[in-house]
Length: 245
Image (cartoon, rainbow, N blue to C red; front, side, top):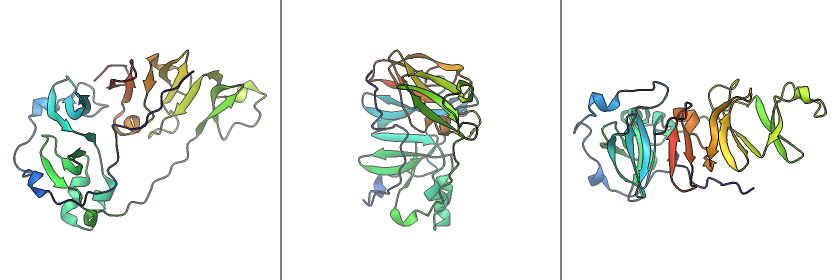
């Protein structure tokens, strides 16, 4: 079975600031704010604004599918914290590291935008602070036996000859445990019969096995969304109820 590999994630991390001076591209922060109706949530578990790709460019839609921020960017991230800006040595810049802003790339230059799409900050190396990486050891890991994938809980697994010690006995063509905040109940991308879906550690099907690929990125951790495709080309997001955005 040929597995599709995610080489580039829409949910990118803008860790390197652009050194080009292009301040003329930055709009004034007070130009406008997003209408309240555009930020209303149908699903409180996911962001009000969701990245979307159209005709090779990225923008943002709201939960009803309305385009709120036009598709003009070569790459975007979720409205999420930026650790380097939160810890900036420039106190005035730290606010742009909060989850009220998203990182975007336009003409090779990285910015933070507000929820109305206004470019309010251009990344500069001198503004970036140092982040202390937060490491949380996973409780569960994939286990391969007889070329099939299963799941084990490290603290309880000793003998592969005892099927009762497996959290999920090896039965899938592929598994990948997604990083998330709930270590006791991680989401797991799984593949069988050349189709991808998502399961939990109790082997319940969360997302049906109907996709040709599901990206192994941080969209679940950052936004409680999965980035999926049915044709291997056009990716979009679904929530844990398999509703598309």
